[in-house]
Image (cartoon, rainbow, N blue to C red; front, side, top):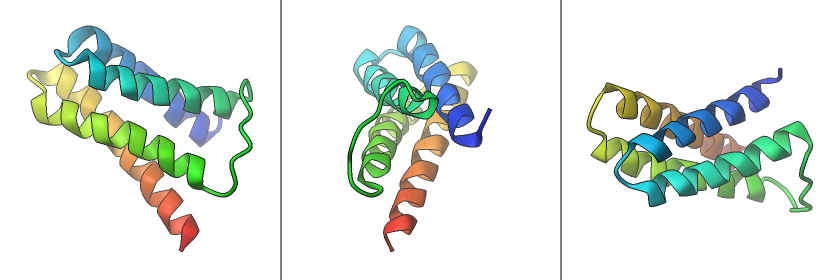
Length: 102
């Protein structure tokens, strides 16, 4: 399993856990949707023709912003850990997409 596939799978697992446990299902659902798109792209189930790192930047932001909101509101060890994993993956992907543009 490649690194981007493992990160996308971790995103889907953490977001689905937060979807069922966290109070805000909207934020967890947004992160879950972005993670599912990322996982389907990583596994080759979906192909999108978007020029450059724009798709990676958009998906990274779509994971990072809801994850930071969930992290801020987390109330317990499990939701805090899952939100931390989501925020790290989203910020890492966003930083890599921004650095690829520079």
